[in-house]
Image (cartoon, rainbow, N blue to C red; front, side, top):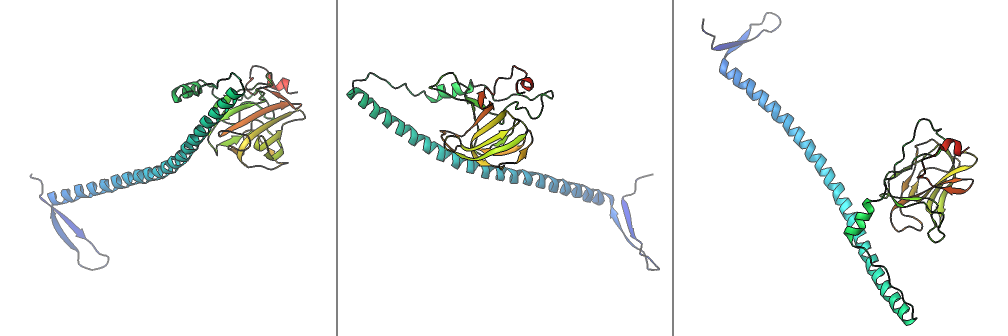
Length: 263
């Protein structure tokens, strides 16, 4: 038996009304189905592509803002470099007039500078479950150490570590404690001091914004500040210290039992 070439579509109303219907060729019905599927796929593809366009547009706006910030930083760097060269020239003249034999060290080029920066150790120390949450472990931010802990050299005395980071990066506590200072310091700028027990404190310096107040209890890993470039600072970074009985210790020294040492 040959296949029917028509399809009959009936409309059956409620009640005693007459039924109505019409016949459609099978190829027309198939074509309508194919067109419907194609239109549906087109709509899905359109909205999928449109969402990507919107996401890219948003990313473009962010990149444009970041580009403007980089332009401003680049201008500042150029001004600083120009001022530094002028200062070097003035000091060189003064030393010659004074009969002092002194030469400024040459400023490294960009490739040398960034190569040395890449060699800096990453600021990451994991916290283990064996250590109490009131014991400072790890570091409050990820990044690279730009200045190490050094209390042996009076000329380069540095009782903590400096971690390079972008302005506005969240600063997290390394242990639970109570905020004992949250304000401005002439050296450390917007600074936080957190007391963890009778003898141990941590210090977070050069912040842009402080998010906690004096007397506030903070858990380990809490967001307490946003990094910045305040106080005596030449570039955005975080200065972090651990003190025991007000004596600084190296925050990167993770080779001992901190829980016992802090008792």
